[in-house]
Each structure stands twice: as structure tokens, then as C-alpha cells.
Length: 223
Image (cartoon, rainbow, N blue to C red):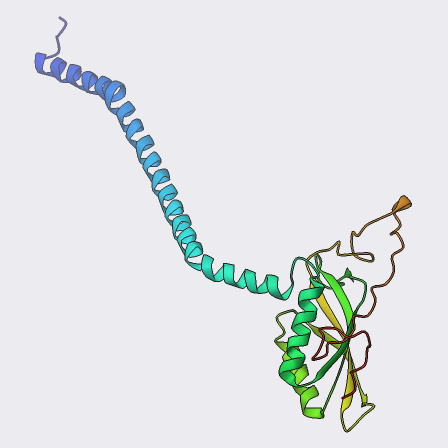
């Protein structure tokens, strides 16, 4: 005689099967979706933190922008985008007047690439001034705050032709970011075959005197 399973046992088994089906069909996909949403949330939170950091950096850069612009303007004044010889001579003449020396002459040379500073041209020159010892010393101090970056390469001091004054000749270097500022620069103008065309050397610019900005002579006027 075959015994049948009790009705409560059959009902329990059916409930278990139904529960498994519900878990597989409904709960597991939902759980997978929840985990995917959690991963998306974590990614969004990380992106938000990154964006907040970038925003703080941009805000800091905006706050520093006026200071950066002022520093850039100062740098462009020290190393201008063009040689600006008239402006340079004016600065040298003003420094001579403030130091109490007689500005005799300045002779700019050919621009050439600066060996230690890519993108910068070096403008060599010679400056001649006369005055007493303390005036010459003051002129050297003025060159340090000229408004143009200046490098004194050599100095020669000899007695002047009159009185107890001294004559000082300086070999100096000025700078510009114009890398094609003239023959001898890089890249500079080139002729056929890539060779720079011949160009005469700029003449010495005569001295300034009280009666005229530049006298025709390279020595101070008598009296």
C-alpha cells in the first residue's frame, strides 16, 4: 500500500519552490541592479570630488591671475618682445642723469641667440660715461634697476681727458624675446642657400649733451 505525503509537507515544498522562483526571477535581478546603481553612485561621487578639486584649482588660478599678469608685464619690460633701441637709450640716458655722469655713447652690436636661454636673443653693446668715482659707482647701481635686464660683461676705467673725472667703458648685454631681431639672430633673415645676407654693423649712437639729445661727437662738449 502506497502512502501519500501529508498535505502540509506538500504545501511546504511548494512554498519553497515558489520562494526559489521568486528569488531567482525577481529578487536577484533587482539586487544586481542595486549593485550596479551603487557602482554608478560611487563613480559619480568620485567624479564630483574630481570636479570640486578642479574647481578649487581654477578659483585659485583666477585669484592669482592679477598677480600673474603683473609679473608677466614686468618680465616683458625686462625682456621686451623687440630690441627697442630708442627706449633702451632713453633709459640709459635717464640713469646717467640720475647718477650724475656724462653719457658719452652707446654702441649696440648685432643680436645673437642667447646660448643659455632658448627663445631669447642677446643684444651686446658698449656704454661709455664719464664722471667722478662715486658717480660712476652710482651709475652701475642704476643699471641694476634699469627696467631692462642688463648683464655687465666687462668694465674699463681710465682717467678722462680733463679734470679729475674718470671715463668708464662697459661691455654689456641686453635681451629680447624676438629671436629674429636682426642678422646673426636665430632664425634671422636668410639669403640664397640659407646664408644670412650681409648687413653693415649698426653705428655707435653719439652722446647726449644738455643742449642736444645726441651730439655729433662721441666726446663731451667743452665747457
